[in-house]
Amino acid sequence: MTIIHKSFPVGPLQCNCTILGNTETGKGYLIDPGGDPELIMQTLEEMKIELEGIYHTHAHFDHFLASAEIKEKTGAPIYLHDDDRFLWDSLEMQCSYFNIEFKPTPPPDFKIEDEQDLVHCDGVCLHTPGHTPGSVSFHFDSADLLVAGDTLFNGSVGRTDLPGGDFKKLKSSIQNKIYTLDESTTVITGHGPETSIKKEMTNNMVIRYNS
Image 1 (cartoon, helix red, strand yellow):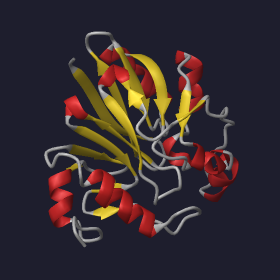
Image 2: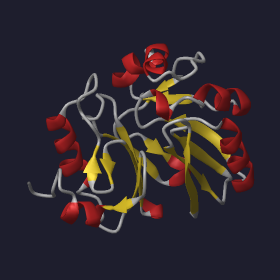
Image 3: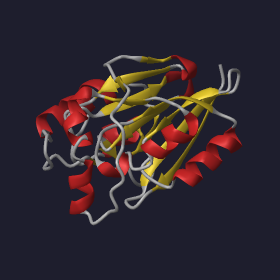
Image 4: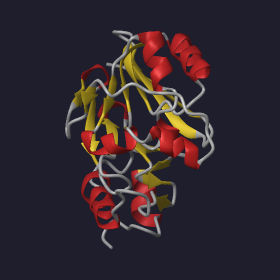
């Protein structure tokens, strides 16, 4: 199985959107379509990927603003961890707070479960609460890749002062689920540059490996 992937910033807050695909089957997944649906569709066509699902690391508006349009164009179902449904349903309020144009988004089609397989790309969903109650990271073993959303950043971690945030849970998620992955794993963060498990275990000043 050969997995291809591409991550690029989209939307008003430049969320990192990721597309992964299996070159043998041509099927794959979209994670965090936070805006710029035309760019996402163009990239899908260039990569020759047929979407099997639209997945979300969490339900802050900047990670799913383009979800409705991508679903309409591709027919792919929307996936979200149920613990973040309250945030998904508050999209209009979130957009108003940031003065972003609100466009209705349909409810998720399926719930993400912890350790749910993403079979087309040798992936697994890891429930990593803390930034939000339903935050999820996606680990793709054969690609040596983790899509962490806003749970872990290059040299930092996701904020926990927003509704549903919990620093103790965030620390547990990072130390017990993320730092236990292979140190060579590349981490695609929710915003900004990528990093690696090894780099964060040794250099992250907020949550160390054994702090």
